[in-house]
Amino acid sequence: MIIHKIKVAHQDERGTISDILQQVVVDCVTLITITKGSIRGNHYHKDSIQYSYILSGEVIAYTQLPNQKVEKRVLKSGDMLESPIMERHSLHGVDDNSVLLILTKGPRGGGQYEEDTFRVSQLHENFES
Image 1 (cartoon, rainbow, N blue to C red):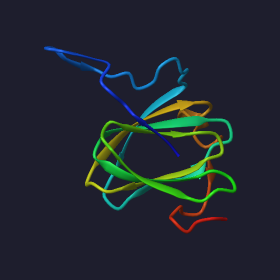
Image 2 (cartoon, one colour):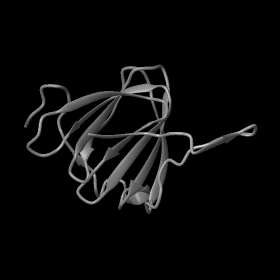
Image 3 (cartoon, one colour):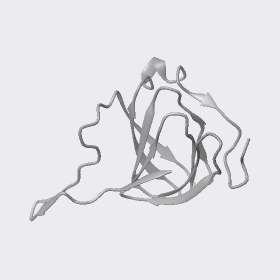
Image 4 (cartoon, rainbow, N blue to C red):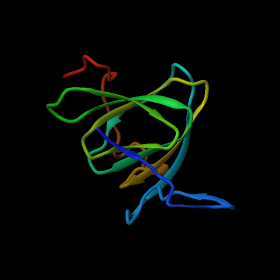
């Protein structure tokens, strides 16, 4: 599991600037919400890298690379989960309305959404198959 703690790059009396991604080509930008108790994901991508930036709220991320154990982390506003190719991932809503910005490198947007999405059983601490 790759977690990036996004830091403020510049701050002055007008506010702050934070660079979420630097020198990464992005093919799709998606805004999603996750309600408390809901699950997003439970899939992996063969050709796409997905970055899930938490704008607000809190989610629990479960990830699993092939032949590895499931990892679990709590993500809060300002955290970004990087899901590399072949990593199974799911996001579980903790707050009433978490908002995430999903930045994807690869065939993931619009009509191509399902072309590189491979569903798996629900991820949790004991998932290994």
